[in-house]
Amino acid sequence: MQVKIVTVSSRKLLRTFIHLPAKLHQGEKNWMPTIYADDWNFFNPKKNHQFDSCDTIMAIALLNDKPVGRIMGIIHNKYNELRNENTARFGYFDCIDNTEVSHALFMCIEDWVKQKGKTLLVGPYGFSDKDIQGMLIEGFEHLPLIDSACNPPYIVSLIEKEGFGKEIDCMTYKFPVNLALPELYYRIQKRSNYSSSSQLIEFTSRTQLKPYIVPVLQLVNRTYDHLYGFVPMSDTEMHEFASRYLPIIDPRFVKVIEKEGEVIAFIIAIPNLSKGIQKSRGYLFPVGIFQILMASRRTKQLDLMLGAVRRDYQGAGLEIVMGISLIESAQKAGFKDIEAHLILENNYKMRAEIERLNIPVHKRFRVYRKEI
Picture 1: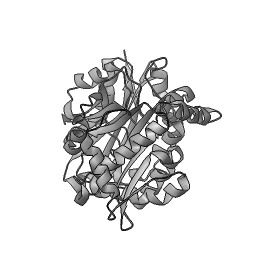
Picture 2 (picture 1 turned 180 degrees about the vertical axis):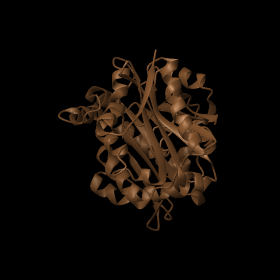
Picture 3 (picture 1 turned 135 degrees about the vertical axis):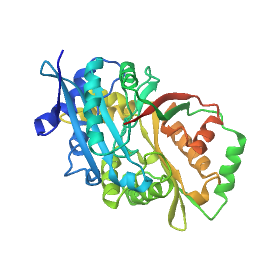
Picture 4 (picture 1 turned 30 degrees about the vertical axis):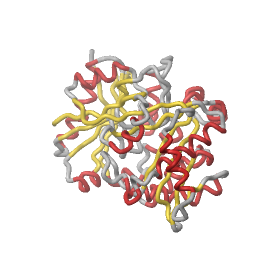
């Protein structure tokens, strides 16, 4: 059996790279495609400015001239410089359940990494923590979240057979909106309501919300800089991020705390879109966008996507104030559950807040490492 590796060097090959997972996982219950319109922008160096500070390679595996696997290699020069690392990444790995195919793909990336003089390969990881990170290792039976891995179990085995070990895990947590909260939380909320030093901002329209998007992302830059894999967003990237996600944000589920005109804390949740994306098969047109919107109106699950508290206000209970407000909005809108998006295992403060309420881990994702 002869496996051939080709690097993506044309629009035709890029189309194969983007659409290959749908062919590999057709019929799998809990697999979800990406939005292909986003993928065409993401993998385009002219539209994705992350390419400006990275070396990249994309490869496809062919078996009897049929595409059967893919992988991407990324060397984030800006991140390596900021963290004083000599690391490369692999991402967007997918293939049939065949060790020869997976080995050929990883050898392609490892050879490229050695040529670039890097000594450590980690992944799956994209350009930053805002891209899909890790492989699902627990929770295969659950509905996937947008921008998270939904690989079958055999993919994990293929990676581990290549000599990769654990780098770091990420988890999601899921809890009912009628969760019984400690009385202390409501005392903190009441105390905050009487404080004139800060104000909880809620929204009823995207027009109201729009001016807060960039300040919110600026706060992310200031508070996420110590987290694994994080790369600060430029002004251009902030506006691109905002234009991508603003159309799917429901203003009712965005909470901001402001002090003296400055954003000091926020959380953002969105109605779960997974069933709509599955039904659309990743295409927005001609009817996919309506299927996704319909799913967002029918779902009973909120996905908590992003949140931050300015460092000098951490421990002041602001996350409790926003959390209670979000739960109240979710209850009013008829939602039953909330799932918190990926949380790093070493984000002890956030995990402690969740686990204090006896909320179990819902899914676990793993980023791997291998010395080269």
